[in-house]
Length: 113
Length: 115
Image (cartoon, rainbow over all chains, first blue to last red; front, side, top):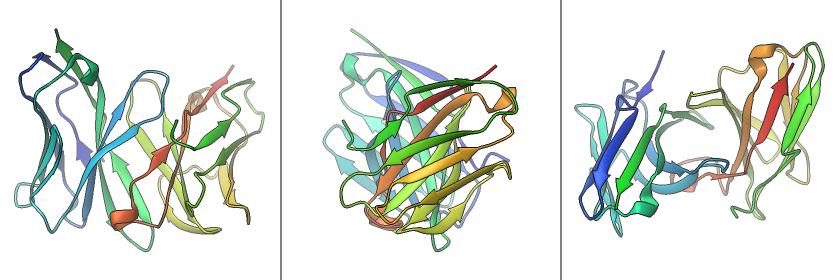
């Protein structure tokens, strides 16, 4: 039962253009969403998050959009840089007293110079 | 460097054996999370501890157990190991137990190989 889905295993973008990574979820009780970036042989690194009470959060080149009615979130990277090439994971949490965090399968982003 | 340390970095063992993975959270973080990443798969949430108490549980097998000690380090014990347990095991820590404090900082992982 995949509660968090990243349907695109990979994405290739030209340097300077926008990268859009998508994520869908099924559990309407999720109230906090996060994006992580992962390089090979390293642990994931936190990028940006958004609470379910918001629909947009920006941090520099990274913007996350949340559409609760569609149970969809996306990460926009503008402008994309070659150093952004990595695997991006979408994650969602539900406050059940603790925070069980469900990760998507990841999308590998290639930014071409 | 996230400030989360995991030991050992690599572990090779045989089926049926038992291993212990260790995690030290970032200074000041009270929550520790354990994840399993099998080949070509996303991270599977196993369990969360907050200040020594179990707070959330994922699809953690009965053969697996974890604890968080008074000094806040955590150990994940895997027993009766099977070939399918071969994976990267990540530990993460956060200040609190969720919400705006749910930014989790990940360690470099322990690669477990079961032969």
